[in-house]
Length: 113
Image (tube, rainbow, N blue to C red; front, side, top):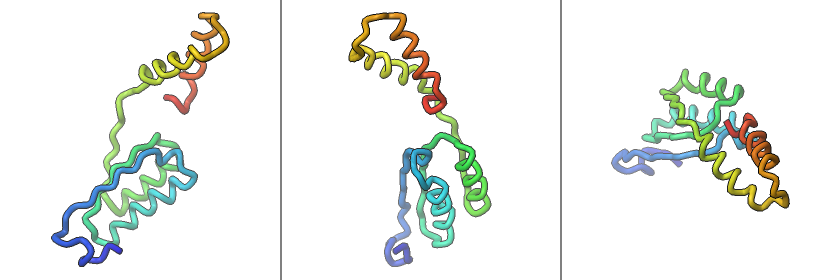
């Protein structure tokens, strides 16, 4: 699929992958990225993911075969809080203290940090 003739002129190919941490096979996806190096194809991969321990290890292994650059994204905690707060209007409760506590509880969960 990635033979020299398939990519005329050696133009760069860019893959953008989001949510590797949400995949049931995130580790295998990262392993596939590292194997792409063997094909000598001009492919750049931009991957977005929370850095879970299993994925962190997979990126460390991949780093042995190809350049890996990690960048931390700015916190999106305020954006998440706004979305959760806007959904509170749909709750059957008009209790402001309950809604504030619910927002705090939801946005403090690890999957939102």
